[in-house]
Length: 149
Image (cartoon, rainbow, N blue to C red; front, side, top):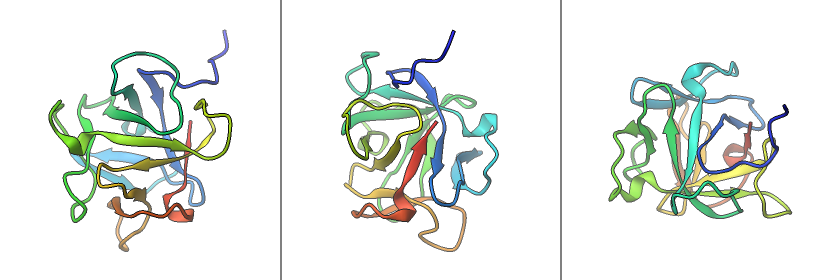
């Protein structure tokens, strides 16, 4: 049977920077953007903050669980890169806004998306000239544009 196009709470996803085709990938507790190959280290489960398995809508609050490690994507502040950390329900740094471009509001695989930190900045590729990923800017431009697979 075919995989439904809608993304629901608990679904497995890959996040790829649209213009560079680089995937978000875990290396230990670091999150980097280095390669285009979709490996096990690139696979995340996306969870709704409300705990349901309903279809995601533009702007929902989410948690990203790294499947291989069981740790959660975290952005402690706007000076440190994205990392993985043990689940902490009270950590604002583990809650992200999941936004999509265009209509309908329902999120689907292959949609163009943006991941917004609790500081309202978007995760971005190559903020500095290294492979670490940061969220330091509020605008949505090419370096912040992702595709969800």
